[in-house]
Image 1 (cartoon, rainbow, N blue to C red):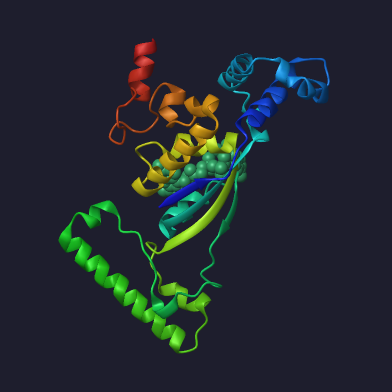
Image 2: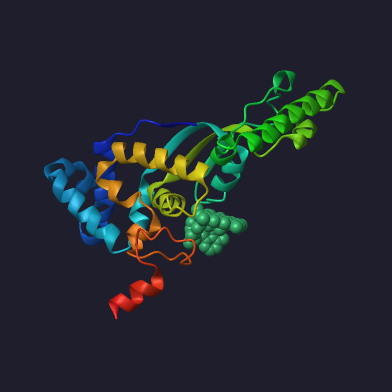
Amino acid sequence: MKVVLSQIDTKEALNKLYTACRTCYNAGKPEDMYANVNETPDENKIKLLSAVIRSGHHSVLEHQTLTFFISGVSRALTHQLVRHRIASYSQQSQRYCEFKDGKFDYVVPNKIQNNPEAFKIFDELMQKDAEVYEKLIQLGLPAEDARSVLPQACCSNIVVSMNIRSFMHFCNERLCTCAQLEIRQLAQEMAKSAGEALPFLRPYFVPKCEMLGYCNEPDKRSCHRRPTFDTFIRKEN
Ligand SMILES: Cc1cc2nc3c(=O)[nH]c(=O)nc-3n(C[C@H](O)[C@H](O)[C@H](O)COP(=O)(O)OP(=O)(O)OC[C@H]3O[C@@H](n4cnc5c(N)ncnc54)[C@H](O)[C@@H]3O)c2cc1C
């Protein structure tokens, strides 16, 4: 898996988000606030932005977008990723990209990798899949039909753009230990690079329990990093 975040101008992002926040609470014109934005110290901008985020006015975060270039992830992962609808995607096509000689890369889930017997069965099936795929291509079938035999483990490349509000929600859901390991690892990589580019937003690129203060998953699924809902409510009362 490789994740690259497209370049972001940190200062410009802060200025833009700050101007969006200020516009809500100031009688002045946004263009004037933006023109004079450098007169305000960054720490004051971050203070206002943080207060706005904490109060739940997350629409201001929609003015900044993050674009990630992602390769070497499974189709099982991308199927989960694209369920996040408030985003834009461009994914390598299995219709237009034919696997030469039937050879495709695939992701081996950790637990299969660590179990020699499971790995053997898994790997044999991948080889068989490649053979059948190639045979169908040799029979003159188009890649769009031959791909039907490809597994969910098959590697894919995808470009995803999300605004910060949507990205925060993605992190909250997919950094949770209830998320499947591969997409959780992707979320960790994405959160790391986004946090480096926009350090003033790093505290929000976290699992949902960190935002809620409690875990809203059933007790048996909870990692107990935070108290579960019932325990939390009892403690609060
Ligand atoms: C641990 C885990 C397990 C999961 N298991 C399953 C599963 O078993 N089966 C399954 O199908 N999915 C499953 N999902 C996927 C999940 O149901 C969501 O589809 C996915 O997390 C995207 O979340 P979202 O819809 O909130 O995000 P987005 O689509 O990005 O939407 C963001 C927010 O916009 C609003 N919104 C978007 N579209 C609408 C709309 N049409 N109407 C009203 N509000 C809208 C909502 O507030 C939503 O939270 C799982 C996800 C996780 C994290």
